[in-house]
Image (cartoon, rainbow, N blue to C red; front, side, top):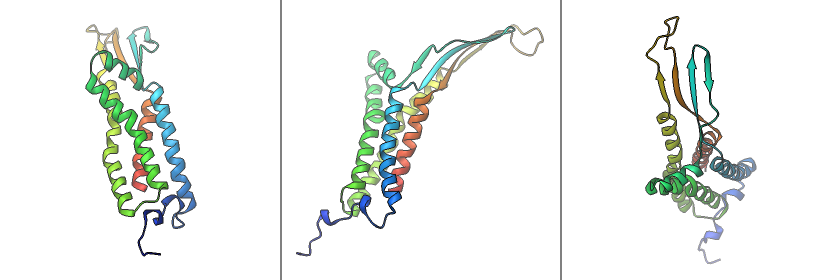
Length: 192
């Protein structure tokens, strides 16, 4: 022994006896599960848009007029030459979440000096918040597409407009899954 401590001698958090086995394997399973949640969120609709009409006879709701998802939103951004937004969404909502999870798994499994692991995890935590870009865009769609028009004629009972027409956005699975996956990713980064 030459007295020099090598990186290979540094502890792997995933194999450390100081960390309970439930935490060791729970973190690995959490990272893998969060990855699958990101995949599911990427390919399913995030927001559905419907038209509704209300009159004295009742309310009618159309089937989905549009289903906004991450993949079709990027496609539409590219078609309309909103290339900066497309690149930002691709970078921070598709590529970055997977890189962050892989780097967290790397920090958990590979032997590293404590200072290097800490620096990596702080960097991932600080930059990881950019994964919320897609969520912000979808929340903006929900707010911007919520349109309501009321007829100026009053109803027979005088309580409200005789007719109204609206366009409503409803959050779907993708939005909920992406928010959950992003929060899980941020929490796991803090736990590490």
